Length: 452
Image (cartoon, rainbow, N blue to C red):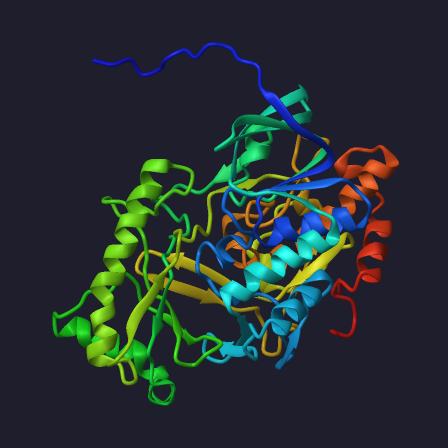
């Protein structure tokens, strides 16, 4: 019987570079953090495990920006601005944007886009901002300067193992990898008791868009009827099936990935990730005939693409001085250290379904501010955490994990990195008033009176 562990010999590791700002993860938070830091004049590297940026919006096949907009007293408005505006313009210049569409019973807007255009626009944004990009490199550990300061990020790639030294780090890994390895406290909801379920997205081509749109609202009823007949069993209710840039092509978000015991697939466990990939493709195989047979407009359609990776919604949440909560979302909370806003409802992917909880009141403002404290981890003095692994409760993360607030957190982290380095202070001690001034100067709306 083999032993559970084996010892590896000590080795020397090549230093691949030294930078003022090292950003881990090329999702929406990471790209904005890297671009903002580089534009502030800081030598900046972005480390990404795939060969392109975008995170769930590219590798996960998401193809829709959620959280850019809010329903402000009944009026649909874009509330996330700054670098997000420039990115949208770049995608639009490539012919890759749909007009924003209403979602969740027509209560909020979402923004569909073409994934290929998104990848190219992100390349242009990052390179144009002066970011050094390192694709095909997986973060695997950290070397500490002392118990509170990270010295280097360790990576593995086809070139072997390497170290990237930095003065300041931004963990935008989604899973809070860097911060957790460095000793920052974190929470992770038990997969058997509430962790958000992942999904695998797929795209369908050859759709008769006119027929499909005419009966779109009937899709849940058609699914229920198909289940009653015994012909199909769907992994979850509340499907999201939307047209893309070309109305012949639609995106389907209908899968839900679980372990044999019913618990959510844990995105920090490689065996569960493998199970989720296999299960997701089986679910696509099993549910797609329903569209061809039962859903108007899909009779001649076919699956043109299954996302390269399953979409993880929740794993580690790094604990900072403040955790954004569900009450903050539903009560449209304000914070004196606001760095941006979030207008998305609580979207909880529970076993077999999706639960939506909206902001409270008869005519709610429709958005909450995001506090600077949610991107500051405990213990660490030279690391910010941005994106779905930032400091939030499980319920708060069910809202603020989406793209719009991740854009906002990322841009704030990049600007804050410049301020911390310039002042020679710990990440939590930057001048928040100056941070807010810089963000507003760069076009970010912080949620004051009068939505843009």
